[in-house]
Image (cartoon, rainbow, N blue to C red; front, side):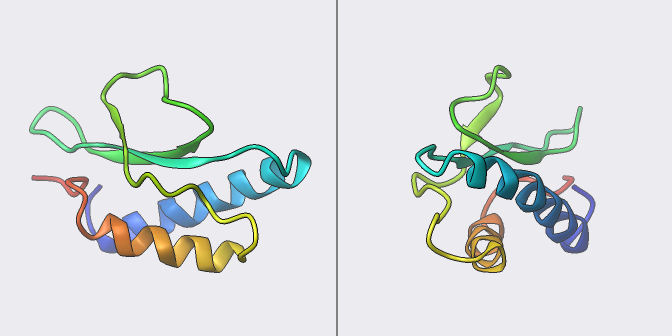
Length: 90
């Protein structure tokens, strides 16, 4: 990712995509996964129920997205974690 604004914008889009899926099945657990930036490609992240098919993605935090908190609170929780992930362009 190019900068912090790009991270925040992409995370907000992920939350918007996740929320309806979570509402449809409240028993599902979702987690943040990230892919590290390298010289060959930009890093990134996504929300999934299980390990993504791409083995380059790693669990960003063992804490699942909060079902009892707002989208905004989930976003803030992730952004606090994202500050320490190697997802910015080198």
